[in-house]
Length: 338
Ligand code: CP3
Image 1 (cartoon, rainbow, N blue to C red):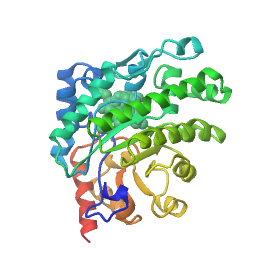
Image 2 (image 1 turned 30 degrees about the horizontal axis):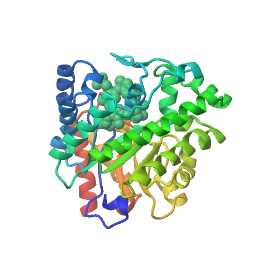
Image 3 (image 1 turned 90 degrees about the horizontal axis):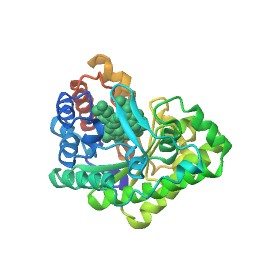
């Protein structure tokens, strides 16, 4: 919270995307007990427990609530299931006729369950640790709704180029529902929120402005109007040289960065008070301790801790050895002690 507010911080904040997940044996155990992934997302007691699992193992500065970006379309009445080994399966939205079946997510059991998980975690979490709420960005969520699941998103991109009214309306509805969902998480106790635009990097030219930056600006403004003190992190994954436009255009407090983009370059294009989050390659975590230590030191020595939130450039991979996170955290703490 200090770094996000531009205050002097004792520590370089550290958290990992997907820090609660399948690489942890204790997660796999609770997941088995819950049944399906979605059952786990909507069981507040279990979701709160898995949110806290990485905090019990590691010296982290933030917890991220255990849920999924597809909770929003699900709460809007769009069919969703997770098929083991295949990822999400959604009812497709490809016309104004399909749009007509969607409703507001507010007061849905889905939103209410996540709010309850947030409240439980905030109650059980040490006050010095921040709790991050999140949602998916309209473009990324819409791409899953158009495609019906994980894919190369070529159909979604075609639809974006065509820019028909129904697609614009879908984006607008996702903006509204994302604002409500983030505000609900803040009311329940989230200290910070992050918006995941995982597929932003696939939008060329004007499409990035129209379907990534503009909707994110509306979400940031909508949340800020109700909760002016809550910082917002935008992760427009793959935006590369355009992260400067994303930062200025969305008016967020911090920019999440993919591993492919250099933090030195970003510091040269962003204003000096912009906070940067990232960006160690998740694949690096599969290497030896020695290599991980070397690359971690390289990363932290390129960016002062007053403007850096340490993270990966994308989520932790399933085959990661949990002990390597300890190596990374100890390396960073050692570096910052000088
Ligand atoms: O970071 C965290 O620890 C918080 C929890 C979290 C999850 N998903 C849990 C999850 C967060 C922040 C997400 C975000 C999310 N979900 C994104 C954006 C970030 C990114 O990865 O780009 C996206 C695109 C999704 C959609 C999604 N959820 C897919 C495509 C999949 C299947 C892929 C896979 O790894 O199987 C999921 C499932 C999912 N979400 C899991 C977890 C822990 C694995 C589910 C399981 O336990 O079987």
